[in-house]
Image (spheres, rainbow, N blue to C red):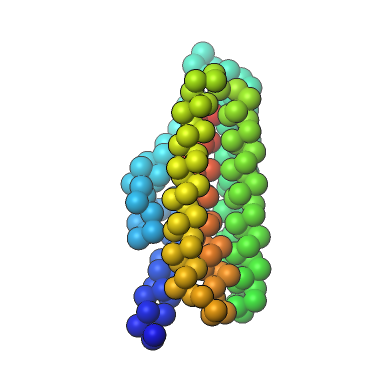
Length: 178
């Protein structure tokens, strides 16, 4: 039991460090994410690509892209200031939930924007990908949660896995706004 909890603690530590480093735009890997390299590439491209030509993207899309990116950065900042500095398990549980809800809300906002702006065929493909992604995320969250079942860290473990998957998916969807 101690070894199992130690492995779970290491996983959570990796997740928390990854979140902190991602706020600084530092690459790292996480064992619960199978597409980390792709997601890091997408996130780097989003953050580093400040030279978008008005002729290649509509002004509205550029504004939305920047708006979504700013919201993502605000969530990263909130996480760093609140979740990553929490000191009690109750605070960790509460702040991990708050951060997860913020990412989930942004994900839904970006998804709805894409639904209203993409052509139907492209959106249909995205919708299928989204269903697959949701299953992958839910499976990963359940796997992590099962390792902590009944423990005081169960809530934080579930939320941390949700944060990891949802934040990466947000950056991917934001990249599609362009």
